[in-house]
Length: 292
Ligand code: ATP
Ligand code: ZN
Image (tube, rainbow, N blue to C red; front, side, top):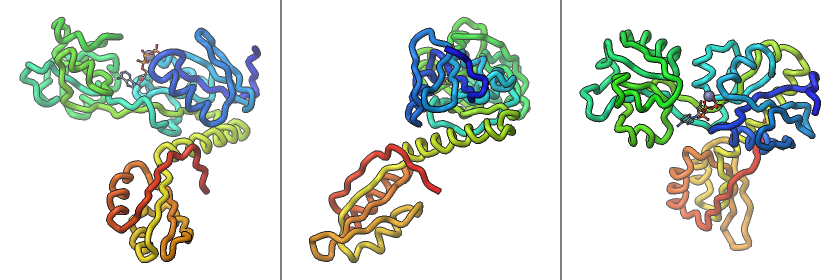
């Protein structure tokens, strides 16, 4: 296995929450590479790209220093490391919030109640910036793991930690009172690498594929039958990305309509469509979507 310096390089998490979805997204854009436990480096067979598997905390720095051109890592880590990297695209997984939480039985109701209190966190830099912005003076206690148990040990009065479902907080009888940062996995890049034409071109090719994948995940393909006279109304309901495909049906005065509907307005659109007399509505997932 040789490290090819001509190839673009991307760093992804080796083991942890982002590891599998990161490999998954790279596979879903057609990259063919091997992966097994303990492997640190994999070249792609069908794209000039080498994949490095690293600890997520090291990724922003590796990208900043140009060890790799690109990285996939949580925005929370990028911000905490304050690395000089370009945040290219959110990738729609690893979503969580960095939140301040307090013991459920405490009298703290808002962050302003934490004046002069102790807040334990693994994100001292992001928390410090947040508290300064809110003009709150609190003591930040830096802890590298298991932050959630610090209030019960009386090491801290509150915590600032990552939350996704909230179940860890619940188990520890904590409740979130403030969001410090909304995070998800991001594609990040080394700024110099983006200035080199060849590396930039390869990066853009990957980004186009990633965008196609993201857009597809966020949309559904909808097919339905409707009476001819409902067509105008249906056109208005279908959100405007592109005019729908309309085909006549063997049955007189009936048409088949196909369209792409974004996930976030999906149910709203469905309910409205049914009222127009649309029937036999079929909804299918979209695998890839490349427009423009
Ligand atoms: P590593 O060994 O690579 O340092 P880690 O233990 O720091 O791993 P993970 O717990 O695997 O990291 O989390 C990686 C990223 O997953 C986080 O930085 C964050 O962006 C995202 N994430 C999403 N939901 C959560 C959550 N509930 N708790 C922690 N991280 C989450
Ligand atoms: Zn980590």
